[in-house]
Image 1 (tube, rainbow, N blue to C red):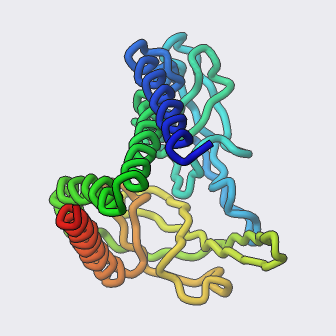
Image 2: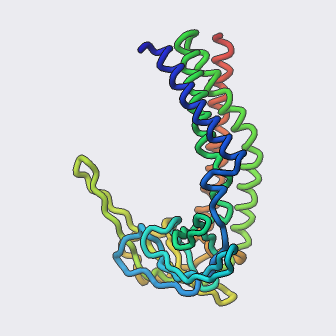
Image 3: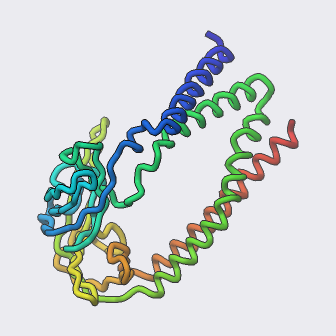
Length: 286
């Protein structure tokens, strides 16, 4: 099978998958559209054991009500139950998702809107179909088509999203300035060790910080940045800067966080310029 035939089959298959996916969205039959979404409330928070794995998140007990039947359930996130809960306090609301009629198959989500309408997979298939078409054009007509086909849409997308990214950065910087400061303590350091196929060992350390907000909420949260020497951080006293409306948003080093946001927007601008330049070069070379 030649490249041209292979790419035609590729585009046909991925295009068909995209069409079927969008049809299911319009018919309201995707898994995401059949998922019940409700809100649960954390009733109890268990402090992680020092040295245990960070994989499963902070152990909590959650109560939620099935909006279809009105029945109330009290459950835990022990084991793999959706998103890892890495910040918890008694009374915090989190999203609970499960198939219609199957509340026992619950999964937690940090974002209540997570799941959408199921557009992710068909859109990904459409992107694959487009990539196949551009690759075919590049092979058949020359490499400038690859620059135009791939870098052009990326540049347009970057230009479209850049103002929103700037506004988001400014909001986050303003939020840093409005954060409250309270004393905290590292109550545990979680550890996971992985070994790759070559026998190389990688160790990941995740400190866990406990602090009490000014309005009395006792927060336990993973702290994956801002601590030097995390291996020896247990029982270390720290200053926690948190967002008053959401203590799950916190930092230990405000200045470092502010610098990272300035650097992030710089990287975005440079990236847009690079792909836009490549797209223009492709147009000129056609």
